[in-house]
Length: 129
View 1 (tube, one colour):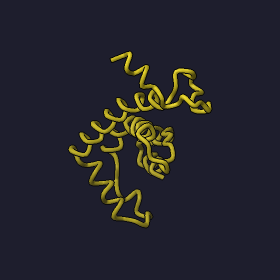
View 2 (tube, rainbow, N blue to C red):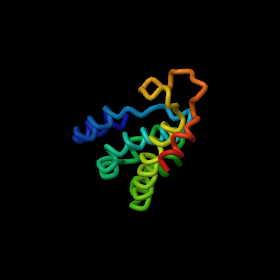
View 3 (cartoon, rainbow, N blue to C red):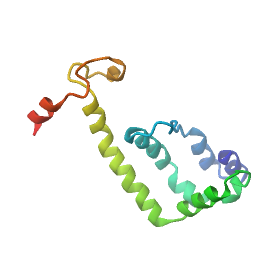
View 4 (cartoon, rainbow, N blue to C red):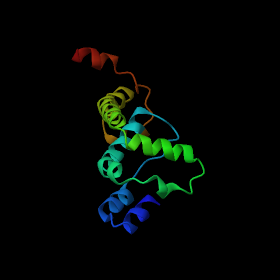
């Protein structure tokens, strides 16, 4: 919806960026999920902040949320908070992935492996301290 509206207004670059965003579902909140969402939003945040118009979402039922979104995008403080949260997520996510894994299955398919040692990395972590 916002991509089409930006294209109509001549903001083709922003429209293309919005179309290319791949935001994962946020139904099961986790730090790693938030990290991937913020990384995607970070790609277009500056352009979105400069070009966002609340009237694009005038058909949205909860207009108070649209107003909050417009206020957030217009706020320098919110942008700084976004940057800090994105940094924390980018820092903590790889650590959480590593901690939840096991020494037996270091490959990328570790999420699909059933192993009794998953999440038991204290000995490995201790040797690195």
